[in-house]
Length: 180
Image 1 (cartoon, helix red, strand yellow):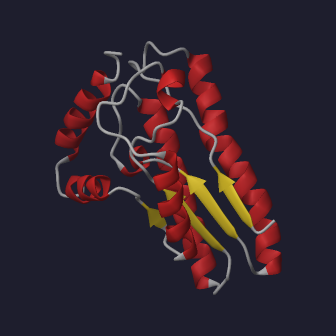
Image 2: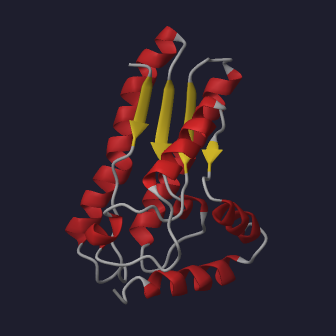
Image 3: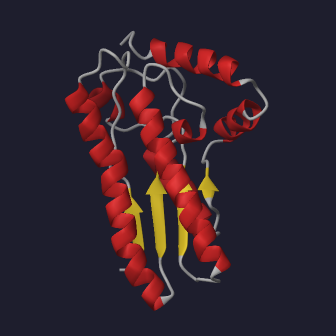
């Protein structure tokens, strides 16, 4: 094995105080704990061999300040981005040939909406397009891979906007998902 793709994950939409704790703990186990464990286990072997790729599927949510109505999901994906970024730098300073990256797409046409019991408030991309861009980025040794130009622009713009404004806009977009 020379490539690990950590792709399992799910979300839930609703007010933080109203979502069932059990659902959120399962989300943390899937989106955070499983990614952490698999990354650590595979990374040890990859570092020993001085080769290999780890692609952690995060989300554009992981690049944002937070997501009202999807607080746990946004936080879990921010964990994936942060963990991946730290490991990337550790490997870089050691001149390791092992590469880690985080893929941060916006909405992708999968069963995500059915599981989260919502609908996307913005347009989505196909899984094939996302996978193509993810592989190009990974083999191009990029750290953060954002497949869509529109999400790249949104992310770039959000860096300059005050946190409160980004949270308000994000909250409005997430609230639309409940109108399924």
